[in-house]
Length: 199
Ligand code: 5GP
Image (tube, rainbow, N blue to C red; front, side, top):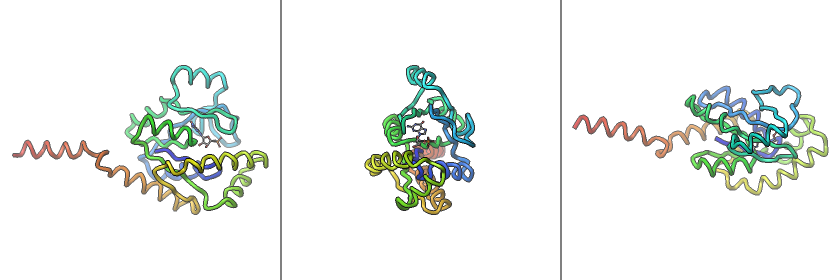
């Protein structure tokens, strides 16, 4: 499952809440060239890498997707998604719109969710509240304009007004998606085999 939103839209808090209450998900840790923010933990929030290291990962085909966001590089290591899949869990990816498009192209069964704050005022408050400098707020709002243009290509839209509600809605989307017939054909086949043996 991929979640995208404009910066300040609440991806990280929705992700934390979801990971806490729904054990089917695991976060696929991504790497970035941006500086670590206070409180962020290496190998938990991101793998913090140099521009050189990032180039090597990219050139070596180690990234499932990558994008340049607000002047920094971000990318999803193939390994971090494979590790989650091997544990039988759903990889939860909170990545930008370009990355989301790449992942959907490679894995069409990916479920994409666009998270939107209830209004612009709330978005600006959230960005200022986390200490973004005014020039950074302006850059992020400009980026948001471009991100909104592609929101219609996402499978689902969730308004992140009340956090617990937004988390519940994303969990409900996952629940429904796991019920899709196409994702459960093995169960139909297994039942049919039992019938075949009986008759
Ligand atoms: P931040 O610097 O605020 O943590 O993230 C900036 C943007 O980069 C967010 O939209 C975030 O979702 C996105 N992002 C984080 N990791 C990745 C990644 O691995 N790939 C892509 N394409 N975007 C990412």
